[in-house]
Length: 396
Image 1 (cartoon, rainbow, N blue to C red):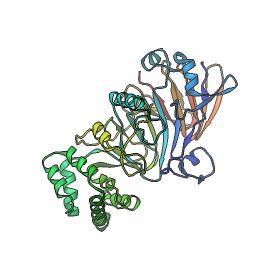
Image 2: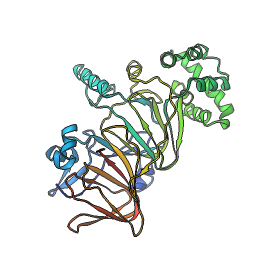
Image 3: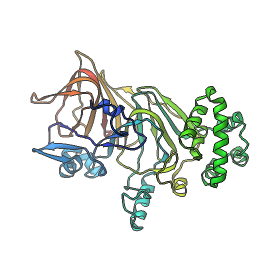
Image 4: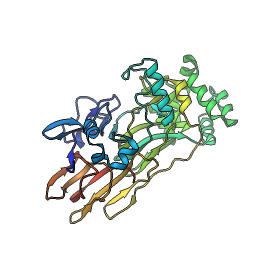
């Protein structure tokens, strides 16, 4: 298990996906027939990548189960068991994703066991916990990328309501003035359907009058057109609204309420599919469970920039033991050389044309959309040519 293996990756077709971004990355016909939301690179049991090994096409999850020490490395296999600890994605959002949060490790384990005892099928639409793992994640923009991430300052929330002169949320604004962000949010999420309809209509109408003044109001108007009557259209007021430039990233901790609104990005996360939704969706919403996992502390959003570790590689700050994200830029005449000691790496080419050189003289051409797995047991590899790769790895 010392050879580099090229991956064939599943594409998930959620309704909010783009018909062009992933198709064009993979060099396929664009626009695609239906929305293509996520390209998964990894070994999650829901949709594992496949590899060709000894003449047979196998799920990567099966190959890792067979050779955990050689693929993951002894230390990572001991720490995480015989499974890849991260899931690497291309996410292409033409429409907003649901407002959502992810549980921490203990919440995920307890929730998964509880729903198993209740006999809820893993693929049931009402299932909250589809595995027992937490899901910290990092998103790095490939295009201009709009998102919401974490509760913003209470004073800023009150300022936005004052600018709109909202009259239908006096009780909720009183809660904010007392500093009670949790009860404010719970009141929004649990109001009856008739009042929710009145509130969203008022806020949407007021936002349209002033939408040119602020992107918060423009997004409220946009969300109201897509999801009339959904209280989630207020999210740009109480969550941090951010527009990442290509190459910028942000991290999402467990319990942070968030939504990706528009754009294409590289996403890297712990290998989990646990999502608790709160709005802007036709899927299952479980408000009581969402309230149990949320972090209700206001915070300033940190925009991450990759930091150089060599002439060709920059790494984003990592806040978790499962993954690290880096970007490799190679220009004509340059050579990127890998570290000698490492865990399993997955690399995706997003631009250019590159040569992958393995020990023993084996060479492979890597073009846009190609991805490959480098097992821990593989010798040092080198990359030449002209192009860009994003790399998922396990921090040492």
